[in-house]
Image (cartoon, rainbow over all chains, first blue to last red; front, top):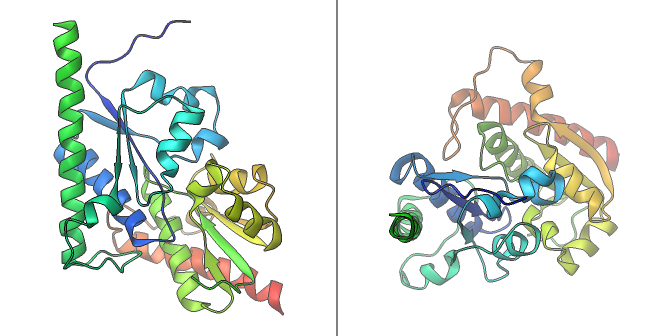
Length: 143
Length: 132
């Protein structure tokens, strides 16, 4: 069955990253994009649903062009999305972005400090830029 | 993270719902209360078949905390060969506390934090029962 690809929404899949602060930053950054930066242009799915869910959930990255957001270089979101759903259009790793902010040390697992929120916002801006790039590319193709 | 923990508390990732955030917050509360007994694990590691994570959950009892009926945490533990000691459903705890209206994923509201406390208490009771 050939699926029609929506051109107006981009899927964002974050690792859960419960063990490391970078995972919490990945989750918060993803929610910032979904709720504040690109609320009408983005959707998400819980990553573990790729294993626990059914065919509909596993088709997520086939239906939506997708950006994965990982906390660390194990890249669980990118690998799981590629293996179980479809190849992501872009992959972002929080620990790479953290290197641009040597003065900020990530420590919080639950509630991010104001400094840690700066990094979450920077990650969110990078995700939003990729969302725009995907949608621009798709409207150029269909326009 | 405590490498000698006797139980692994694994919340669902819960990025899509406030009840998922409740499960995550509850897991952190349990670990704060039981730092020598409990630890957590990135659930995403199970979705990629991480070897080290697989060894941990097959050798240490796990308690899954799930935010919705999809039961991502419990199912991922079982599908990865883990020892599931118990599953605590946030929705069950909410059903018994109908006045609470949890909201927020980036940050929980007061009711969400209260619900997380109640879920954490239930997990701690299971742990206490296990290590008696």
